[in-house]
Length: 158
Image (cartoon, rainbow, N blue to C red; front, side, top):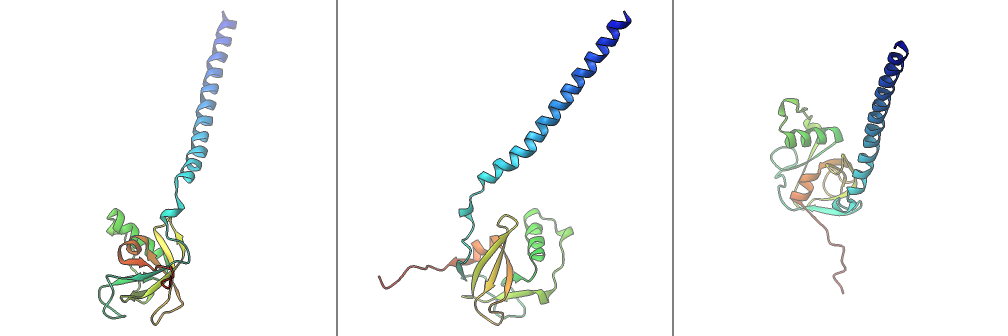
């Protein structure tokens, strides 16, 4: 009788170990396969091409130092915190941005897309006009789509 109980106890623990290992392997598989599959879903064509030139068509600032208008940020973290606060309405965690680290763009100012961060939420841009010409700043992606137009590179002499 004692021998049966011992083997039954071993059988139960063996089933538990197998179930535990199956769960671990299944979860590991999920954590490996899902991010890999999500990587294939992202379409690079939804992001503007690096090197493309865009012009500000609306929401331009009347002057360079203050007032409403399109803003670019010196730090990518400032741009991302502002984007995240707007998106999730989390104004209690909003990080203050030093106004010396902001540049206000005027209408028809041009920018060149250099790179994107945070899955296209923030773009690294180079200013092509104005006092800060040639310097690199960060722009919120939603504002690029809303307030800028891409320059056409087609030859007009055709």
